[in-house]
Amino acid sequence: MTDTLLLLVSDYGLLVITLATLLSCFALPMPSSLMMMAGGAFSASGDLVLWQVCVAAFCGAVAGDQIGYLMARHWGGDRLWARLRGRKASARLLEQAESLLHKRGGWAVYLTRWLFSPLGPYVNLIAGATRMSWPRFALADLLGEVTWVTIYVTLGYAFGSQIEELSDTLGNVIGALTAGMITFLLGRALWAQRRVAR
Image 1 (cartoon, one colour):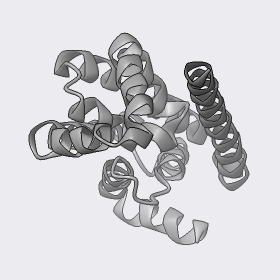
Image 2 (cartoon, rainbow, N blue to C red):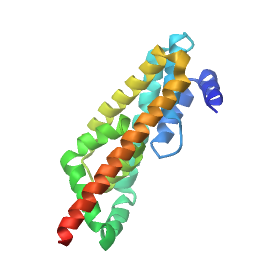
Image 3 (cartoon, helix red, strand yellow):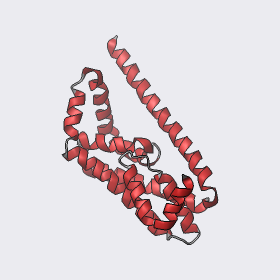
């Protein structure tokens, strides 16, 4: 499968990179990080232009994030959020998540662009549904996507010959970090719920 993806990048270049980063923002299983590294590797060999790869990846990612945020903010995200908050089982956790997003929302958005990237699409929806201010969301989103694109395109540029091994290693590290963060947040929520129950 990796060979097929690399062929797509070599044949269609910037369009494939843009679409991969855009679609990954909707939680579709797109290997966008691998595509960006491939773009970096093809830039190192002279087949693509480095700054164009960076712009294509950045534009796709930002467009996807903004669409997710705006859809949740203007087209029903608030109704879904209100319905979930109305359920006893989830109301307290959702209130805590909303409070955390309002207090530390910029950092939550920024870190889920690149460090905890599997959570990014969901943070976009929560930020829109809870009406996080758009300028705050947009600034954190832009900074996070610059970080994401810079890291992966640079890695591909520098280590193009080992792109598959690098992709597997980074995928495992990010998966472990995301699982650890989710475990920590769930443990914290359970601890808070236990204290309230007493």
